[in-house]
Image (cartoon, rainbow, N blue to C red):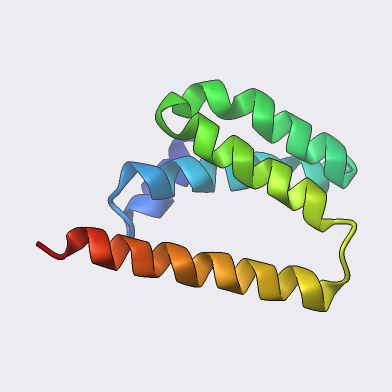
Amino acid sequence: METVERATRVRQTNSRAIAYNKCNAVILRALIEGADFSTALQRAETSLSNVAEFAAEIRSKLHAAVAAKSKDVTEATKELVSRVHLQAVSRRLSNVH
């Protein structure tokens, strides 16, 4: 995970990005090792103790990913884009004084 953190810090110097990328690395490693999607997500959830500050947030995203599996690609993509857009707007508004 040290390599993931160093690679993330090249462009992102915030703890949230590092936490998410560590979680992504666990999922990717599990999938490469032959685990199915559900197992990969379970491994990622187990690894969240290493990123306690963002564990609840990331856990909710993992659960949303599991829920999205039952949707068709178009519907899941629309929901994802909407959520990302709303989060970006919310962050911008919180930075306005």
